[in-house]
Length: 335
Ligand SMILES: Nc1ncnc2c1ncn2[C@@H]1O[C@H](COP(=O)(O)OP(=O)(O)OP(=O)(O)O)[C@@H](O)[C@H]1O
Ligand SMILES: [Mg+2]
Image (cartoon, rainbow, N blue to C red; front, side, top):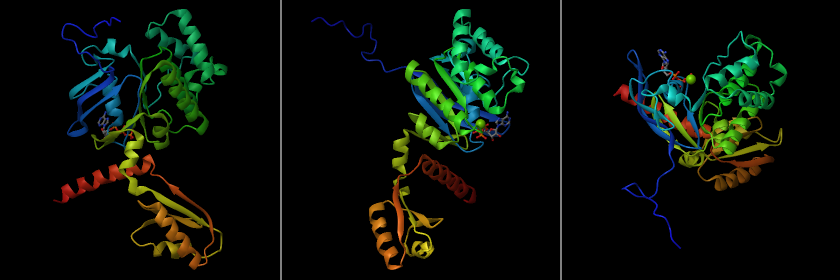
């Protein structure tokens, strides 16, 4: 069998999948405040990448630099291999953006808003009508096609923003807290459609969020940003493994069968959170702790109703990483 050479003229024999997004030492200052400080990461094509951080951490500022809404003070932003500062129009052709504040045209109808966005991306007429019809149905907005943007509630506006961002079938979608403040059904609809577009079209997604469950469900990898600096970047599972000591045992007792607080205070060297009729105790060895609770509980006349071992959540990871960083910063200030 004859195999064609993989490469010639000195090209690498195996090429890695291209990066959809590259942040290269991105930095942005506002006056003397450093909002984003030398942040570097790459997002692979087809990846759903979560960007987590407390309020004011620099998430939106990073998203705005990557989408060309503001210029970095220093560093580079590349999307689909194109430098955003050098070729902004070309770069923007590959992306869809849902910014922090939904900004639909208030005086245009739902349908006209989607059409306008499709025209801006030069989507041919027949295709834009077909896509808009499908998207409005999928986002449960078909019955509101003639309503003006101004008449929409926050959740409906956000769904319209998603339609507008998706009508050009972008290679890369940027979402800045897409489900914040939305009801459970709207939030789920948005998550389902984003995930569907990732699976079926291979769309890359950059998503900022405060919702740890959302990041856990949707993201292949997650970055945590704190005070403008990248504090961690990994898969949700690998991040959870970092805080294994945050495994816990949650126990509930039959009502009026004793005082769970007394038992909780007997568990030496264990951090405990009291709950109605029980408590949650954190430990790296949940098996041994569960036994201890059962033995001591029986001796104190407490009847166990339920007991479960809980693995760390992304929220535990987030709190551990960001409070650690805050403690370090405080220590520096004192020194
Ligand atoms: N246009 C601006 N002018 C001055 N300061 C700004 C501006 N935009 C952002 N900042 C500051 O930069 C820092 C990062 O803000 P950014 O909006 O990126 O945070 P965030 O992580 O998106 O927060 P949130 O979770 O509240 O949305 C904050 O201290 C903020 O006050
Ligand atoms: Mg923000």
